[in-house]
Each structure stands twice: as C-alpha cells, then as structure tokens.
Image (tube, rainbow, N blue to C red; front, side, top):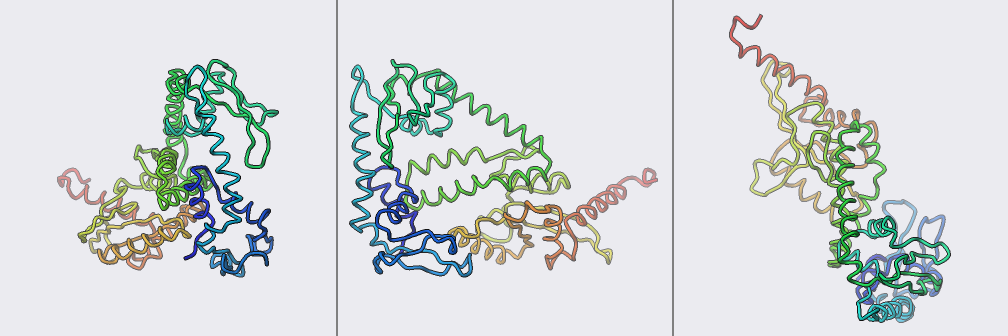
Length: 400
C-alpha cells in the first residue's frame, strides 16, 4: 500500500500528539537520512541512491509531463531511522510541554496560548491580536516570541524549538486567560468587524472586481484541501478548527444571498444583475435522488420560427481538478444530470476570473441545446417576451 507525505505527517501527528507537518518529514528525509533531494529540473523532490528500494518509488506526474513525484510505501511509518528522528524532535518536546503545564503558580493550572485557542475554537492570530491590543503581551525579536507584560497572569518560559533555537513562550494561568471577560469581549468584537466588512465588501464591489479579488484568494482552496485531509484521518480538533476558519468564507452577495465561496458570489452577482429568474442551489427535477445544482436560471422567449420556448438551465461551477474525491463526486453528479435529462451549463472554477462576461456567454453558446444563444441573448429575448406578454394581457384600450 502506498502513502503520501501528508499522510505520513498525519500519522506521526496522531502518534506523538504533536503537530508534525510534511515539511518536517521532508527535512528529516533530506538532511538527516539523505533519502531524497530537491531537483530544480523536476520541480520536486527525487529519490537518492541512499533510499532503500522497498520504501519508495518515483512515478510520472500526469499534471506535469516529463516530471515525476515520489510515492512512499506505508512501511515508511515503521522505518526505524525516521521514527527515531521524529520521536527525538516531537515526542520529547511534547513531554516537556506537558510537564510544564502541570506546574502551578499558586496551585493554578498553566496553559499555552495555543491551548486557549483550541478551547475557544479561535485562530491563533486572533488570540494574539487580542492579547496585544490589551497589552497583556508583546512580541520580542530578541526572544523569538511573545513575552508576558502582566506577571500576575502567568510566566515566561524559555524552550528549544524544533531546530534547537532558544525561544520564549508564555505559560498563562488558566483562569486569568480562559475566563477573562476583557479577552472574550475583544474576540467577540473581532467577529463583529468581520461581519460588517463582509457586508460592505459585498455591496461595494462590481462583479468583475469581485472575480479579480476571488482569483487571489487561494487561501480558501488551501483550507478546503486541509479539511479534506483532516476528515480523511478523522482529526476532530483540526476539522473543527478548519471549519471555523472556512465559515468566514460564507459571504453575502450584493443582493443579500448567502453563498459558500467568492466564486459563487461572483457568478450570482452577475446573474442577479441581469435577470430576476435565477436561483441559488436548485433541486434537480425528474429524479428521485436529492441533488442540488450550484445555480438555476429560467428563460421564456419565441424562437426564430415564432414558437414559444421555455428553457430551464442548471449551472455548475466546478473546481479542484486534482482532488480525487472531488472528481469522483463530480462524475457521480454528472451521471445524475444525464439521468434527469436536463440542460446543464458547466463553468470552470479557475477560468471565471478571466474575461468573465465572454467566458460565461461562450459557455451558453457552445451548449448544443441552447440554439447558439449566449446568456445575454437569452436575457434580452426573455425581457422582450415578458414585455409583449404584459402588453397582450392589457385591455385593448390600453395597448396604444
């Protein structure tokens, strides 16, 4: 059975109850065991002669023709040189931290800032920002970390980081941190600021500006990938943390609709600016299975032969081309669209940031069931049909 470097990191994180990352694994494999080395021409790591043949192999990278990537045998997690090196770096450090936590000042429990963040399900940057603004701590370049400004709240502790560098961290008295109303109120105020900013942003940007902003928001994609990895290894703490961080990406369009990503926000802003017949997350008709499309739009018009036409169009915004689980779900969803026999227009997550109007209209023109009409063409025909219908519904004396 093969295993990726991120899966190796996840295994040792669980084993040592400490944050082992892929870069830590690569550091040991490169600098200590010398099993791999970075290749500029390959744009990735390659195996060296020192790596035992049974531990790994290089495979062609289908996303980068002519390049390779390393796939490890799952026996790597029991490879003694690797286990010993990681144990020395992470397991001993963990035992030291735990022993420090058991100390007390006035018989009080001590915790790290990261413990507080986990307990309150907050990001470290928000916790540190609150503590800085309240003047409870400050960052010291010379100490390589935050130092305590209020001695009655805990103490400073020197420690060696993973690279054996001496740094300083704060051990807080549990009650002075966790139950401190000043800190809790400050954190709550940050949440309010985020909500206000999101609404202002939604109302203040045009669809093109929104798409341009979205194109730079790779952090969202990164968090989704990390969440998928955390769910795969059932890391409940990480899952909770990542879901909390992703929740801020549930944004409001300038028309008040709550959506899951800035990409969806851009598309829906475009829709609502053109027609009032569009819907977000429409249940698929004609099948028993419960499936929701990303978007749905409906048009009524007369075709070139004068025949009444009603088009019900479902729209999907696809993304994450390299995620196997996502691609599997995409394939399953497409088969359900085929089963339902509906019109489906497909958009690409990566492409909507470039010439949005042209790309969007082209997706409609290319569809074999839409008579070569663009989205804008259909909007115009629908408006024309609605106007004629309204006039025909009026009493003869009012038609002019």
